[in-house]
Image (cartoon, rainbow, N blue to C red; front, side, top):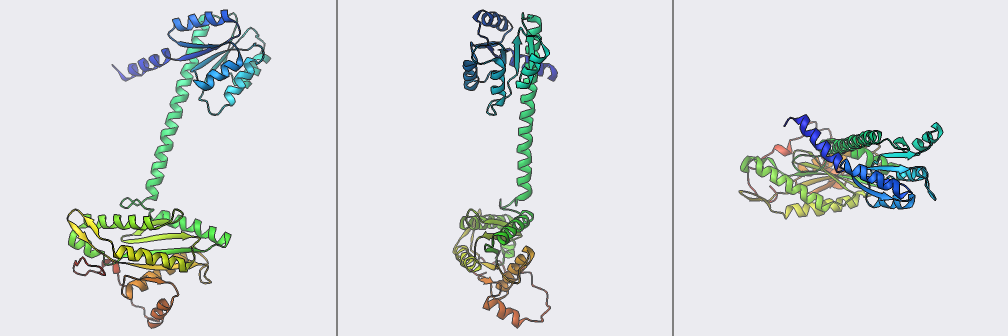
Amino acid sequence: MPADATRGAAAAAMESSSRILIVDDHEDNIEVLKVRLESWGYLTASAYNGRDALRLVEAQPPDLILLDVMMPEMSGIEVARRIKGNEALPFIPIIMQTALDSTDDKVEGLEAGADDYITKPIDFAELKARVRSMLRIKRLQESLKEREKELLEVNEQLLLMSQTDALTGLHNRRHLNERIDEMFSHAKRLNEPFSLVMCDLDKFKSVNDTYGHQAGDEVLKQLAAILTDEAREIDRVGRYGGEEFMLLLPGTAVEAAVTFAERVRKRIEGHTFSFPDGTLTRTSSFGVAGWPNPRIDECDALVRMADDALYVAKETGRNRVVRFESDEFNAHQAAHDGDNTPRPDFGESSDGGLAVAGG
């Protein structure tokens, strides 16, 4: 069967199973409409007043409502206004039926939320056409809503992908930079402390050289899991590049960040990384910087200082936590003052592939 014919058959089947609520205070009118609609293949329900109609609509929303305008206690116009004003309900087409044929009456009904009008005495050929037209509009509305939902889900997935490191599932570098800006601005506005921790796995190249890149990937994923487990819910953890990770600690003074980093360092040192063909151990180095600090007036400076502290941790023996402007940091800087030698690439240094702690 051609695609158009298949869609047409599906639409016809959906229409024939549509449920129509008839609201009228005259039993005879309801019975006549009920017989005619059911002969066309529709399912029906009925209510004799506005309050019962509202109760039925909330309990089981129909696909369409045939609503009499003139009813005691609550008019059809008020019923339409309440149904259309209920945001918890889906789109339900309302065809108002009335003996009143003045323009003002129709305008009032349409402004209350009615989607169409039919006048009494009812021409059933016209009614059939109007019902089919309204149900077609409902199907289009539902299809549009479903597509909007799918588009929103796709956009959310794309946004998540653009913010996430594919290997570890952590924030990627671009998203980390965005969050640093937000968090640093928030800290300055509220005068709250904010710390940044850089973490680097020591001599990671030897893992890839000895065991292969798949093993290296497993090590990085397990390291990411450790960092995430140690971080608080309000902290942000991300992969900054290669084997280097960044942790953003809002509301955390720099000394507390050092204590946190030391705890994580010990956990990594005592962890056995496993992969399909074996196990290994590795150590890590940390650089910590925090605001407030008179030398930090922007988030770029905070990142640079944490990175400088990490560099000192690497150069002074690895497997340690160094705080920016600590005694250890200052002593190293004083000893190398004026030294313009390029920084060694610690991530590429090799220990010959030995899988030992402190390697």
